[in-house]
Length: 321
Image (cartoon, rainbow, N blue to C red):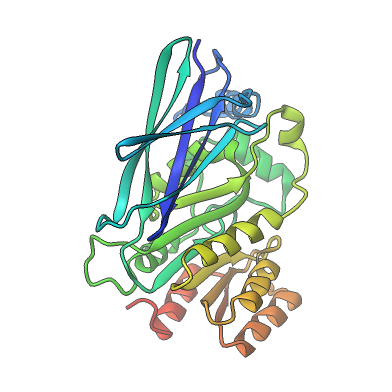
């Protein structure tokens, strides 16, 4: 048995590179099998919440000609924030991280995004924003996670063409893409499942910013307590790329409208548009009031039931063509 080194997509601006991951203790548990269904799928998902993290493990980032050393935090998480040399390389760029176990070097590779210079950044929630997750129905929500394979999970109609258009908004060169982030209250345990889902449905390649990892079955079945994580992550992105105009996408099943309202108040000239998916047949009065308040700040808003409405709105305000 060997430790598991898991990397996530990172991101960079003109001055700084940020990459992150986890180190897990040696285990015989198999990684998530994306083709399994029913009980086998449930076993795979549950195993992702039973894996044990490695505290204070030595981790090494290969950056140019130098090797940078850090150690994992209590939950096995590590993060490198390092100065970035000025260069002309943009787009998705590979990086490599390694650990040493019993004299053997274990390496893993991932990519980070250094967005081509542009004007638009996109930040989207995941559950019930583009992935049908039944957040308001706990039974259906857990049934979907446990007993439906990632290949059988559904995306909302017309989400994909909308997101693809946003990814290319304002770009003359179709090989260049806007900075795209998926920020969710889902835990890092579900990273591979969500990443695979976006690949299957051809959603834009993006950086994932998820919630602290859970390390027990008790944690898996307990209710998520706070959405402050999402607020802090979104605030960080807007501070990290201060010259972009942002499109925020979420839904009204939980706290997205309130989070986005707070973000718009703090960054009054940075957010261009806010999109909120309607999770029930009727609009929520509180959400409608928030959208009107955002409009008074000069933010364009769309409270929609179907993504076709959001596409029409994006075309109307000139974000996409």
